[in-house]
Image (cartoon, rainbow, N blue to C red; front, side, top):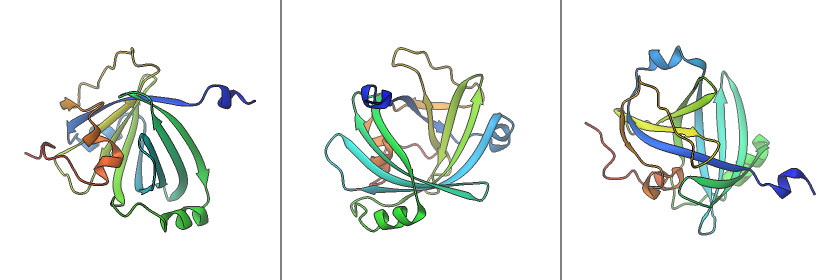
Length: 175
């Protein structure tokens, strides 16, 4: 039995609705990378999210398939694997038609050892989503002072990526 079978990978993250940051400030952050993402949801079961993603960074596209099983508001068992472009396009054909294909630009950067991901959606030009993974639910999150948090949306099902593929919440602030 592999270690991964004994201890499935658990992703614990906090999520925040933030005002659109100054992209020039983001580009100056340690480890900054920008990716364009196409995210497609597949039919799944309650409590489980099944998606495929094409992520293009610096001209190279990586395809992944992810199954997430929610275990709390902050944590999910995440089974993710890289797939081929051919597998991606085959799976795309059986997408969940109740959800739109999500297009977003992801800005990744680090402060110390902490990673931050800001997802910018073309439908929203004044605010976006900040996610940060943490080692455990008890860990304190220190947010960069150059970001303005509107509110935390961790655990708010309307702000999960799968829900955003259906609709944006009415209370998503766009000044």
